[in-house]
Length: 406
Image (cartoon, rainbow, N blue to C red; front, side, top):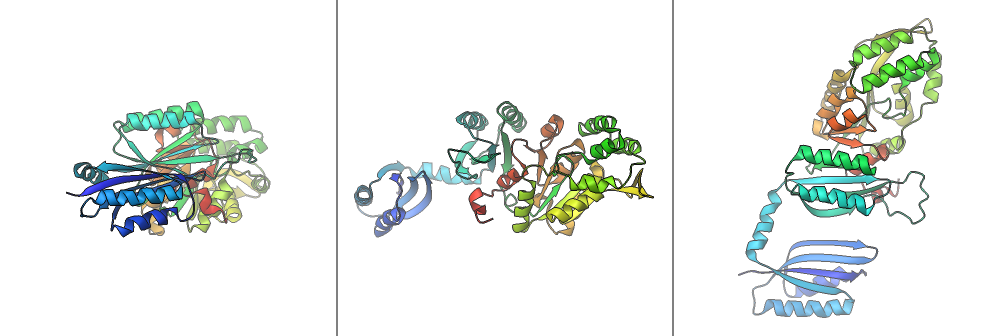
């Protein structure tokens, strides 16, 4: 019969501690079946599942030597026997699905963790690992817009995925946090392309509203834009109506509007880091190529697909040249880009805020509704509303400490 023991060590961390304990175990030819270690504020928590060698009173000898070494190192050690049946059941659980739950906020409070972990528990999921992805927050927070992120690795299958998602949305709304729930698979850390809607996603305005304001029809166009964003009007129809209202606008104002575009929080940092990690980026927008190409040059974006405004004799005609980029076309372009890059759609991230982005978000491996209307949040698989676009880095598992040299 095999003798299996869970060995747990806690106390002040110090250099060489793990090596010293493992050296003692090595003298008795112990097998390491599992191991995990974490350090919080210089306090160590080390766990090892060990299989003792077949010899007379092996546990007594090994445990005695480990206890001596632990005393010498100034740490506490505990031994818990594990039956073979219990160990085999634990091994069998490794076939169960794993998911990543990501909690994002400006500052994370105990209440947030209590609510989130309660929902996880109620859905029959077990938390295996908790990891902080954001940097260590200083006591005197100098960042104008701080961000915090904790990632949970959970195991099992949700009892009711739809109900669980609804609960996530409810506490997100009530407590000002974002929650993402993704399957842990080979694609999650191997995304290769990120496609963005432009207006109200990469930039914090709807360009057509700015054009309308310059044309003196701002209020009328804004009402149509909002209705389209909520999914109340077909995008093609809404675009046609808005373009007719700005017909005759002096094309010279386009450059001025482009020069004054404001990026949404985290956009520039996100794209810079994605480029450094080898990602391709794209704008797929129902907006206009003039502004998409301006952002392409400014940010180093690889692809732009948008509507081309027709300009004749220096004025906007109210027409679009070529095929209109509507909701269906956005999804189609995303698929074509994945094919061009020779990657799976599972390796694609799509980000948008409006109803016309939903088909594109749905066909991407990771679809994110960014600061979106309620209908879009509810329909998309993931929503990011509290922190900036660079919060997407957390969703692909990038930690702040990975970027210290950026």
